[in-house]
Image (cartoon, rainbow, N blue to C red; front, side, top):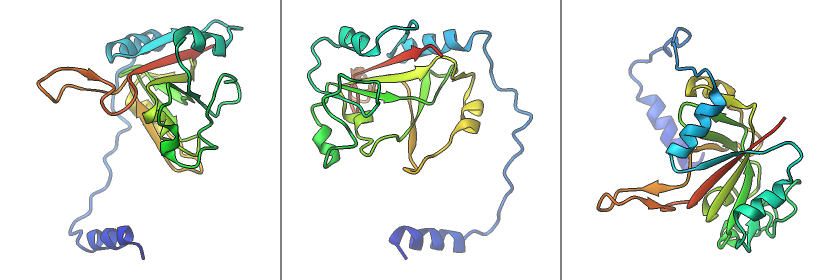
Length: 195
């Protein structure tokens, strides 16, 4: 038995009283007349950027326009032909250090707070956090209103990991000065793709 299982076993042995999960079916969560517009506004308010991509637009060309100085681009997405690194083919996560732009795919976005559900779809998930700039490809039809809807849609794949990402990394812990890119990407751009 692993130490984690040993710890969990001790916790379970000391549970005195158990409670049923509350019924959440009657919660009236917030909804929006235009979830896509709300999502785009929230993305901006958290320091990110969202761009509606026209049908037929070359994604690789658009990313090059957005990040003209990028030398190291990491992605395992088949449509990204400008990638210089593949997070499925590196030996260790730290081999992705120095990535200028990481390009990943989001499953759905949340209008309420501008976050995107990112299931792990690559061997080294570090690309989501170590890249200086993060680009998330997201179908614009996949925007839900609120976190209640979002939690109902979460699915895990074989990796068993996923995370919500909302804008670039930021902190104002030190002297109340806002620092972008404190723990992860300095910028986050969501490309909202047509169907």
